[in-house]
Image (cartoon, rainbow, N blue to C red):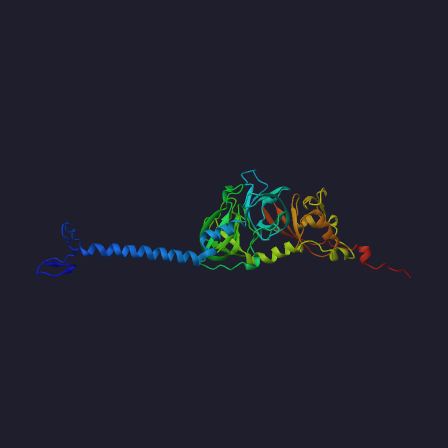
Length: 390
């Protein structure tokens, strides 16, 4: 091979090589195969190109990045602490903020069966919450804590999911968060849209509407009441309770769509479940008398005393309908009653003599009971006209 400057001339049978210029007094540089330099150059170019793409992606994602989505969503999740501790019952569950004024949507459960319910925000602040209203048939409740300017989900902006939608499930499962710790996050997909047919122990769930069946292990203690969102943090539904499928006896991972719950939530927030002043002022000719049905309720100790049945008179309309002591009356003719006082007011505006439908809670089961008014048969002397003698 002949070398002249940077020129390379071929000699028959020689291997092509690249040699740098030869300077006088210096050793010639070791020749390097051309095949080793091309991959190095390509890798360097790819590194620069990847960095540029990553920078562009970061600029384009902005507030929609996964960390930003989780930060925004975490601030809307709360931890709920209340009744429990007996027979293995957990005294905690999850909830989500649905108004800047501190309204919390959560699951309707035994955890709320106490006068002291505590709500812990994402930043660790603790508030005593009161029950605004509930719909046991949908198994939801709304709490209120005295706070303002809170980040919250907008129910009107909730979206519909479909099979294959990637989802995030945020909740305080297993009660691992007690202060300013963030809620647990699980990711998965919606595997099916179905109608719920489930049970808790031997009791069937009262809700029979549509649910999202999830490919994520959300069926854990404390997860009920948590939020289901899509990958962009938009609200899809509320995580359900620990239930088993009535057909397969398998644990269910499900969430109830917000579209199924929104009308009831709006009614609770608007106070429509309570007797209105116009209804209280309009008295029937003969008001409903529970004593006449054979019902005796617990004494009215406070304004929030729940309407529990104290006793049932034998051979009364209430006894024939199947009411029993310790039953908790939740609805009368479709109207929610949250206290003994509300029930008394509702009875004053209800006409006696008609069919009465009650939704009660007996243990952990909801029952619908129809009470038929007792028909008094007229006596023979009253039904037959008196015989007039000439």
